[in-house]
Length: 307
Image (cartoon, rainbow, N blue to C red; front, side, top):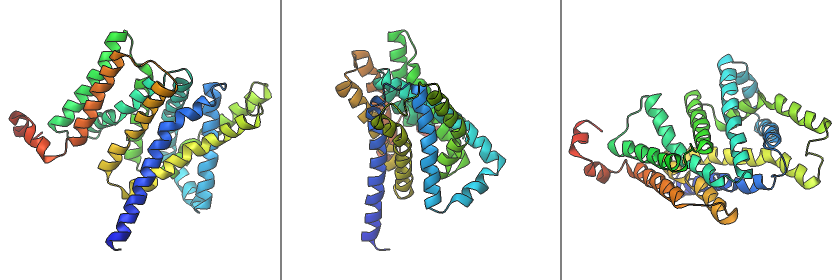
């Protein structure tokens, strides 16, 4: 493969990655369009139709036998149950937060998440951090502390989103299961319960699937808006360096933050500006932490300690 072909593949990978994070960033617009539907019902539709989308994709790609084989292995079923619980809690919290007017706090959760993932890597996987990476985590913790102390409450929406998605990511890393296969495994174990809830709501006359054609279409297509970005991300991550993916992921919470402030007109106070500012600086430091010139800038004492 010549250099020109490699560049085309790389640019295509960048396009897929940017498309995935852009889609995740603008998802609040989609959930806002469903604001008349309770968060629990939206979640049930998102789970069930995500399973339908993922199962159809596996069938199209001829991977259904591979899926059946993976599902027959007990550790994979345990993985699926745990991940299904975590991602369901994450999706429910996010949908509820958007429709309850907490888009800014939701974006805070996804800004914190990469640094929480680093923390999990150190504690669980025994990965080592350098001086600047430790500084970035401490700055992010300070950003959360500013809101907690000033508001007199813990930013629980941001923390639930961080804890559930960060732990979900850790399990997926340890399990090392490809994204489409993982999504199918995770949704197949709770799709029956989701479908049962949808049928119950419809039978009771409180379901929204038959309310209008446009609303029904939005509920059904929630599976596609969930599954497509995951496929795009998987395609991009195959050819784009992890460092580039790491920087690109901040696109999603940035778009979400702008939507919260400028489209949904949520308040963005001085306290939130300080908190977000600390986290943005933390992310910048972490992104640059591998550079040689950053190593030269760190205190000599930490160089001797091997950090």
